Length: 273
Image (cartoon, rainbow, N blue to C red):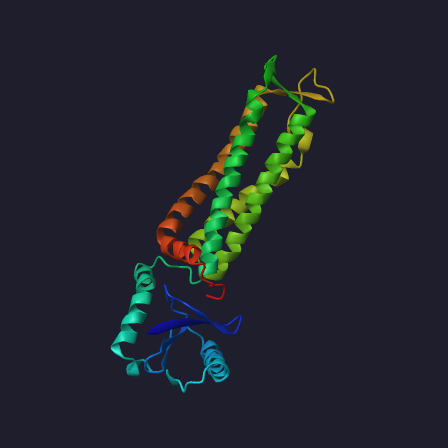
């Protein structure tokens, strides 16, 4: 019977793995029948990880096992069944690498980027809905009649949604640098620039519009043309983020759906992978 474990360098421990191998993994395949351990090294693995992993493995065996396990590190000495197991667990990774689509090398960053993209979409949609709410206000003499409290709530919500969008974009921007994913980097950077511009513009508060005659401290009369222009300009800006995020989310899910489903369904601890 075979059991496969992946070395977690951060926690300095070995974690059981049943689904997939990555090119920077250090795997230990236990053959309980022959009492042999076949240590597989990914092509992109660092020497320090190999050294630490083998030391951790030897230390673990000395403390927890009464058997005299034989550790084999040369792949030329692996039996066919071990090669078949490794090839099977590398299949998905190899397919993606061959297509040059698999830019991400860590399950943690895959899950994070996927969640962040969904979050960006949610807050962008909320921003769009919030933006058009004043258009349903009552009209007097070609001006929208909006109470001061509703006006402030409208702008505050727009700022909050924009700030959350900016935070999520910034997180994806950092991940894209770490994973060297150029497309995500460009889309995130464009979104960050747009959101910062919007937030700076919104700092004008009540002075965003020229209030029409008849306005009071508690009731604002805003020109239909002014408010419509403001909403259209903002919608145009955030729709750029919306379209690019939707495109990236679709493409991302299409590329990494196996890794997202595997990691979430089986609750695999892949924080260091």
